[in-house]
Length: 307
Image 1 (cartoon, rainbow, N blue to C red):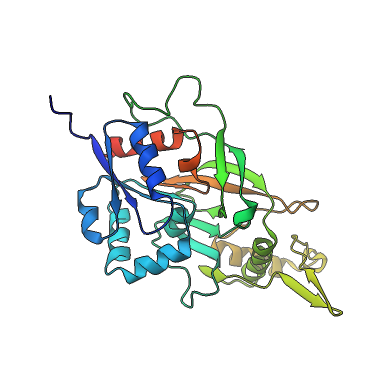
Image 2: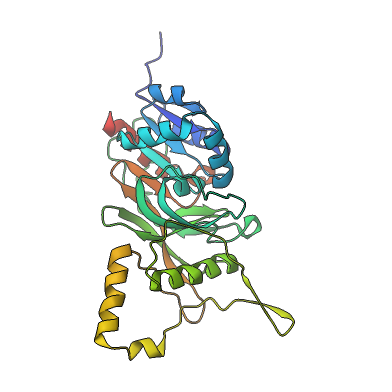
C-alpha cells in the first residue's frame, strides 16, 4: 500500500549552516512533512514554507548574492505570505536593521528583510562563548499535529532549552511584530561597544539601518583598556530647556529606535530572543540542536494552517 503524500513540503536554505539538523527536526515533528534543501530560485516553487537556518550570516549573504536571482526570489517568497522561519543567522537575514555587521563586507550585511526588528550580531559572544539557557516556550501549534513529536501533554509550558552559538539579539521590534520571548543577558565586549556607538547615533538623530563593528578597545597612557560601554545619563541634558527636550523626543519618534536600558552593575539588558510577524518567525537561538521539538512543531503548524 502506497504511503500517503506529504501534507506539506518545507524547504531549508542549504547555502551554509545547520540545514540538515532542521530537516531532521521538522520531519520528526510530523511524519507527514517532507523537507527539501533549497539552493536555487527554481526550487522555491514547490514548497509551502521555508527555514533559514543558523550558520554564518555573512557567508550566507555572500553565497546568496553570488547565486543569480536567489536573494530576490527569497524576498518574493517572504512577501508572498508563505511561512518563513529564521533561526540565529537566518533571523539576521530577515531583519530590516542590523548592527555589528562584518567589517570585511564593504556594502554591508546582505539582508532579505521583511521583519521590522533591529538585530545586533554576535550579541552573546564568539563561538567559544556558546551556552545554553532557559528561554520562554513557543506557543502551542496553531493546528493539530498527528503522530509527531514536540507537542506532548505537559511540556508546552516548560522553559525551552535555548542554545546560543555566536547568537544575535533583537534590540527593538516594530509595532506590528509580536514578541514571543525575552531573556536578560549582558552583551559581549565587542557588541557592547557597538551598542554604545548606536546610542550615540540615535542621540544624533541618525536613522540606523546597518552599522559595522567598532573598535572595542581604548588606548590611553600606552595601555589598552576595554571601552566603558554602560549607559550614561548626561546630567547637563537633564537640565536642558524644554525646547531641547522636545527636539530629542521628535528625533527618537522619527527614527523609531528605543534601545533596552543596561544595568549599571552588570551591563545586562533585557533583549528579545523570539518574534513573529504574520507568517514570519524569528528565533535568536538554535532549536534544531536542542533535544526539544516544540519550536519545529509550532512552525509545522504554521505551515499546515497556511495551506
